[in-house]
Image (cartoon, rainbow, N blue to C red):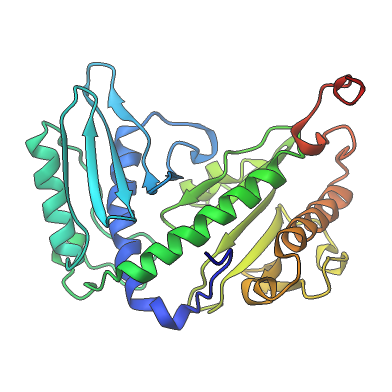
Length: 310
C-alpha cells in the first residue's frame, strides 16, 4: 500500500465538501457534550484503526456516556453507549440533510439529545445541515484514501512531537478547518484583542509554533505540510527552510512555511524530508521568539538523562 498516495483536490472536491459537513455535524455534538479544555483541545477528532472518533463524551450523570465514530473502512457511522448499546448506519448515498436527520434520530433512540448550532462553520455556504440536499456525494474510495493519508500524517506528526518536552497539544484533526496539527507552546501568554472571535482568542492566548497538514482549499488548491509561529515575529519569512522545495507563503497577513505534498511523494525519503521541514520551521520560530530550544528538546521522546548510558 502506497505510503502517500496521490490526492489532488480537484479529484475529490465534491466528496470532501460532503464529508466535511458530516464531520462538522458530529464535531458540534462533540463540542456540546464534552468538557471545556484550554485551546479547544476537547473539540478535535482523533484517528482510530478504522477511521475517526469523537472519544467518549457526556456521562457524569447528565446524559449517557457515549462516543461517535466514523468507520471509514466499512463506511459506517457508529454510536456506542457505555451501557453496551450500539447503533450504526451507512454513510454511502446520503445528503448532508439525510445524514443529519438519521444521526439525530439514532441518538434520540439511544436517549441522547444534544443541542447544536446546526449550520456550517466557515464553509462556502451557511445552508442549515437539515436543509442541505446539495452536498450528497460520499465516495468510499476517496474518503478511505483521505483517511489512509491522514493516518500516516498522524504518525509523522507524532514522531515530530516527541522531540519537544514543553507543553504540546495532542496530534488532532480539526473538523472545522479539516486540517491535522500539533502545537508547541513557548510558555508565554499573549494579549489577544477582545475584538477577535472567541475561537481565535482561546486558540492563540499563548505564543505557539504549530505544525500540520491540510488537504487543500479554494485559496490553496493543493495538499501540503505547513508550520507557522503566532504571533508571528518580525522577519519570519526570511528564515531558512529545508528541504529546498519548502517555501514561505503569505497567508492572511502573516506567513506559512509550506512543503507541498506532491513534492514529498516523489522524494527518496519522504518521511525524513517532512521531519526535516517541520524541524527547520520550528527552529526558525524558536530563534526569533528566543525560547531555549535545547533545554526543551527530548530527542526521540526521551528526557531521561541516564537512558543512553544503560
